[in-house]
Length: 167
Length: 292
Ligand code: SF4
Ligand code: SF4
Image (cartoon, rainbow over all chains, first blue to last red; front, side, top):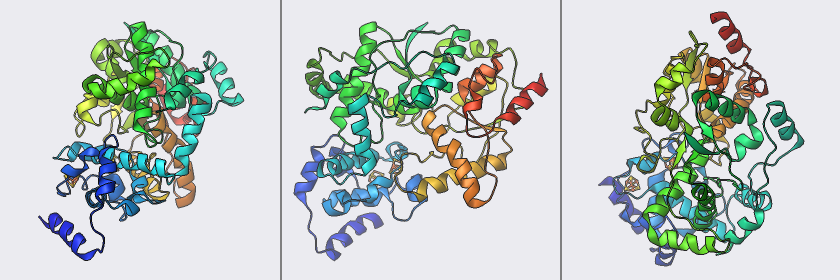
C-alpha cells in the first residue's frame, strides 16, 4: 500500500504528467508490454543483487518510472538500468509476471535506438557483424587450442548473419 | 547418445581448456559429440540482447536451425549460451506470432525454425540422460578430501519456467555432480550470488566478487567449482585484482566442473589445461597426488 502511495506522491510532487507516448513505445518493444501489470509491491527488490550493492538501483523504482513513462530518467545516457546484473531473480519473484528484467532489457533496446546505450553494447554488435563472434581470435588462442589437441576454430558464415540484422 | 555441442565464443576462443575437458570427459562417459558447421555467437544474452531482442532471437534461431537440420539436441557448456538458446527455443515454440516474424527473416537465408529439438546445459545431460551413477563409475581417481565451494551462477537455473533445471532457490544438481566424483561440498554464504559480470557499474560487481571470495575463503573450501566461462572470467582475473586492491589474499583456485571431472577420470592437469588459469592450481594438483 505504501508503494502505491509513492506512485500518487510522485505524480503530485512532480510537475511531469504521465508520458503515454513513451508507454506505448515500451508496449510495442518485445518484453516491455508487461510493465503495466506492475502494482509496486516491491517483491522484486529484496533479492536483487544490484539493489543490495547500490542505493541508486531499485527495480521497483524503475518500474514506477516505466508506469509514468519517464523517458528521460530511463533512457538517458548512463541511466541506472545499465546496473542490472541480468540475474533474473526478479523474474522469479514478481507475482504479476511483469518480468522486470525483460522490461529493463526492452528499455535498453530503446536506448540502443536512441543511441544512448552503453558503448560496450555497440562494440559487441560490431564484433558479431564482423566475425560472428564476441571474442576476437588471436595467435595466442590458436596456439592454446593446438597445445590442448583441439582443432582450428571454424569460421562463421557472416554473410548469412548480415541478412538477419535487417528488420 | 548423440548431441550437437555448442561451445560458444568464450570457451572456444578464450578458455579452450574448458572445451578440451568437455571433449575428453564426454568420451569417457559414452557421450557422442557430433560437431556441426556454421554456428555463430549464441548471441550474447547481455549486450547483444540489449540492442534488439528480435535480431537476438533471429540469430539464436539460426543456430537452433542448424541442429534441427541435423536432427540433434544441442548441448551447451556456457550458462550464457544456455540462456540465449533456451529462451529463444522457449519463446519461438510457444509464441506463433513471434516465430512467424523470426521465420520471415530466416527465409532470406533459406532457413526455417521449426521447434523440433531441445537445448540443454551439459550438466543436465549428465544428471538426466547419462545418470549420476555413470558419472561416478567413470571416476578412476576420486577426489577424496578436496573441498569444493560451488558457484551456481544465474542462467543455469533462472528463469525457472524456461530453464526447468532445478529449484532456483534450493538447487541440488551441482552438489550431486561434484559429490559423484568424490569432492566434499562445503556450503558458503554467497553460494547463490550472481557473478556481476553483466552489470555496467564499476563498483557493484567488484563488491559482489569481493563478497563471494571472502565467503568462500571463510568456508574452508580448497577451490571454487563452477560451470560457466563468464563467471570464471569474472573471478579468475578478479581475485588477483581485488587481492592487490584490498591487500588481502583473496585467491582461490577456480575449476570448471569438467576439468575436475577429467582429473578424477585420470587425465593430467595439463590435459585439462589447469596451467592456463591465472590463479595457481598447484595446491589442488599436490593434494590430488597426495590422496592417491
Ligand atoms: S535481473 Fe536486474 S533487476 Fe532483476 S533482480 Fe537481477 S539485478 Fe535486480
Ligand atoms: S515488478 Fe512485480 S515484483 Fe516488482 S514491484 Fe512490480 S509487481 Fe511487484
